[in-house]
Every structure is written in structure tokens, then in C-alpha cells.
Length: 477
Image (cartoon, rainbow, N blue to C red; front, side, top):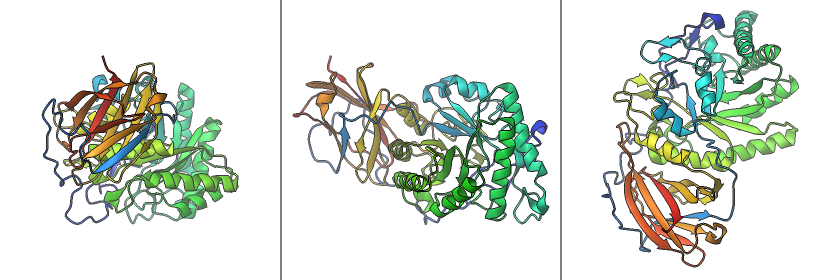
């Protein structure tokens, strides 16, 4: 999950040694074999509807149907999937590129020093920027300790019975934060289930966890602790961890793990709902009062730059009622962790938004209350209704390699008082530009539609592989 390069951070007050820093997941690092197929390369992705194209919006044939229930509220839109891993600096990207995205989580090491190109990197120097956006900074304490190279005979916490360096690192970070009056979530260790980040026994990690939690809580008794942040969902590992943490009185406040999906040879993000349901049942059974969950890295390498994959993950994160952070990968020979591109949402060469930036922007424009979306085999989405703004906004996407025609079926429309007999419908296509910039979504449909009984039926033009739609419903003028 990381390249062979180990980044050396510069933050002596935190006793930082070798750290992951700005080298993260790469093309050839523990990605499951997928043959020669690259997700998003096939399936009619070249189609580009012209501006104003009205084809497909009448009630013709369609391949699949997506059902949206306008009568049920899932709660106020909170942008649960709007988290960034490391890939911001103090002043880069620009406020114009960051502020509209409703960023809620920023997960990084405490302080990676000052990059010559982008400036200060890390949770500590970015604290004010993140909190001014309404976000929460998450400090990954293991980034300050670092990860010794494979095969190292020493250097991990607890080697030779020595925990002093690790305890000093954790305590120092918490002391600095407490002294500044800054409120962080403390993520004790990154991916202790993966050998790059933990090359010792599970028992040694559990003791590392215990000592890290206690060192933080000496400085900040009410600290919010997150973990274990394992690299994949593993119910057996989580149960063992929780059993230990409960017995040692060092339970996390937030239970966390990572979800990467099909390019890792795993199930799609719809499995997140089942995983969360399983862990909630276990916690209830064991009398453990953890109610918060973080998927604090999500989306696999092959899906990272695909609009359809982003929407697929957003929809299932919202459906599961958990919070999530993107992850970063090799991006054209450099790590999207360290180039201040919001984990690849921005093209590093031109500093212009990619299609995934526009997808996230569309997600952040959904306001009011979220409503349930019943996914089809190829399509999923996030939909909101906002009586104050007098609009309903939706983000819908195809998460397969094949172009498909989808019909949107909005049911129980009588529960939306501002959308009565006539609805003005617009659809902006978000093409799959992959690693290239995208100037803007394409206005493809704008039409007035009448309700059919208590339903609004809209058949979209054919959606190419891995593309998305930004949709708005308003009353007819």
C-alpha cells in the first residue's frame, strides 16, 4: 500500500523519525490482480451529448430504473463522504477550489514540515484552515513515529521492550494540541493489519495502542480516539481488537477501517452497509458503547479518478450513516498525498479540476434533507430535497464499464410541496475525464416535466461507463 520510499518528516518537537508522509499507495503495491483491464477504459465512454440534447428524456426504453422516495427523510445533508487524506497545504489548493467542497474531515500526520513548492503540510499547520471550513482534523500519530523498512530488526514500538520513544511522540503531540487549545481526533496507528505499516505481532500492536491512548489521555483526558484503522474490513481482527481494548479500558471513541472496493479484488462499496451493520450488532452484543464509525480511507486505485466510482462510494457511505475520507495514490509518477491536489481531484500539472472534482462539487451542492435511493445494478446516487432553497438536487452515476440508459423514478412526490404538477428538470453530464482536467459539466437536458400520478419519471440519455449526472428539480417558471 505504499511505495518503497520512506519520507523523512521535519518536526523535531514531535520527535518525528521515519514517516510515511508523502509516499502512499502506488500502482504495484498490494493491488489485487485484475488482468489487463483498467476500470473505466471500456463501455462507450467516448459519447458526449451536445448542449441542449433532449434525447432520452421522454418515456422510451431504458435498461435500468433508479427509485427515489421523496417522502422519507434520512436526515440533513452532512457530507459524510467529504474527507481528504493529507493532500492539502496551508495555501494550496486555492480557496476557490477547496471552499465549495464542504470538506468535513482532514486526516494526516501532525506535521510534515514545509514543502518547497506547496508550503506547510500536516494536521497541525492546517488546523485553522480545516476548522474554518467546518471540518475536523484527524492526527495519525503513527506518521510521527514512522514505519521502519521491511525486515528491520528494530525500530518498532516495543522492540526490545522499549516503548519510550513511542510514548513520548504520542504524549508530545497531545501536549502541543492541548496547549494550543486545538481539538483533534487522535488516530493512533495507520493500517496495523498491513505489513508496510506494522511488521510485528498483533499482541505488540495492541500494547502499542494501549500505551498510545494512555499517553494522549494524560495530556487530554477527554480526547477523541479513533482506531484501529485497519487496511481492509476484517471482522475477526476488529473483534479481537475490541475485546482487548475493552479489557484494558482503552476503547476508541470512533471505530475505523478502510474500504477500497473492486480494484482490490473486493466487493463494491455496497458491502460497507453490511460491514457497519455487522459491527453494530457485535458492539451491542458485547455492551460496547461505540456509535461513531469512520471509513478513514476509501476508493481503490483503479476507481480513484472515476466520477461513477466516487458517487458509488458517496451513496453507500451516506446509506451506512458513517463518515469517510478519500485516499491517495501514485498519480503520474508522484504521490497525490503530497502534491496538494485533494487526493487527485485536481490535475497536478495544470492545477485545474478533474471530473472527480466536479463530482465532489455536485455532491457538496446537495442541501436540505437526504432521501432514500434504491440502487439498480449499474446506477447509484445521492439525492436531497430542500424546501428552503425550493429545489431538489441529485448526483447519479453509472459505476460499470458499460454504457446504460437509466430511468429515474421519483415516487411520493406529494410529500414535496414545492414540486407539484410541473417540474423544471436540468441534467448536467460529468464526463469521465480520468486524469485530465475538465472545464465544467455539460448541460445536456433542460425541460419541463409533468407528474404521472404521484411520480416524476425521467429517462436520461445513455450514460457512458463511469460517468455521472448532476440533476436539479425546481418548480416550473
